[in-house]
Image (tube, rainbow, N blue to C red; front, side):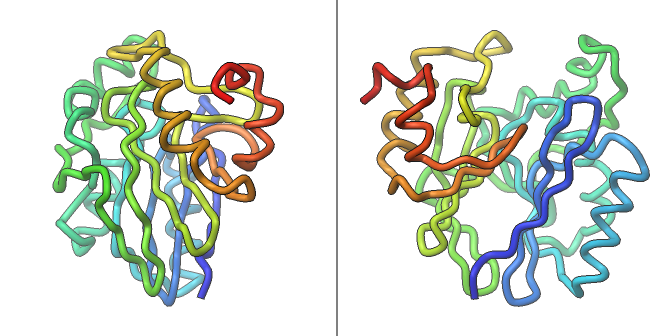
Length: 219
């Protein structure tokens, strides 16, 4: 069965929180849910769809993607590995989420440390769907994307947006590294691959290859 995707646009940062599911198993990806109502909306969807949360996944550790980490870790302790899965290069970001919030004038519940370290080439299984982990640093040192090859879908975090790319002016961000990640890990995927970003509308690899002004020198 193909992967089912439900998105929630949440928080003052208009972040995309995703629930991925297949055969009754679900993954919560990047819980930017900053309010009780936003978290309840995610839980209501899970309950109505009869889904069991198997994975808690982070593409990276910036504050707008981790507002709900503490809540959902408590809510779903039975998730695989017992908590959030993230690339260890972003551990300092997660550990300093409260300070990140202070810098932007918002409150963040202190998230728990990541329970499992993701690495490039890992496979996250959800029902009969296999998500391959791609390490795509540049926006943050530990940024990852989750690639459903069979379904032609990339959950890309803040690496690539419709008509833009992730910012690189935050801690350990680097433009050259980000562009190399996009060139080597994203633009090598089939043009029809749908990209679900951390903010904004969905796009495709082919559309961004052709029209994204930041990528023209990467052809």
